[in-house]
Amino acid sequence: MTQQTKTKTKPKEGYLFRKKVIGWKKNYFCLNGAELTFYESRENKKLLGTLDISEAHMLQETDEKNSKHSFILTLHLPGGKRFKLSTDTQFNRDLWMKNIENNQEQENENENEN
Image (tube, rainbow, N blue to C red; front, side, top):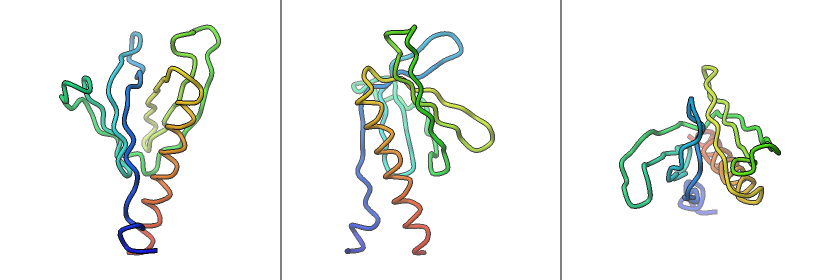
């Protein structure tokens, strides 16, 4: 395995809903390495936030009562913070979870090599 392969993580991007105090907000998310950034939209790249997900724990939920936000992914961040995201399908939620897990593993491997 080359050094480039070891340090490279596959970026993932797309629309997700994030839970706000009241309701949900659709934003454009980019996962690159151990960072999850979110923007107003794909066209309007106004940065709204960046999350360090290197030590985040994930839980998946299904809310049968809320058809628009049924497939929920909750990121539990260090310091007790929680960040809830919602996708349109279970497949997409599982795909985001898999990508986050893969990026976390890759980041941990990179840290252990240094």
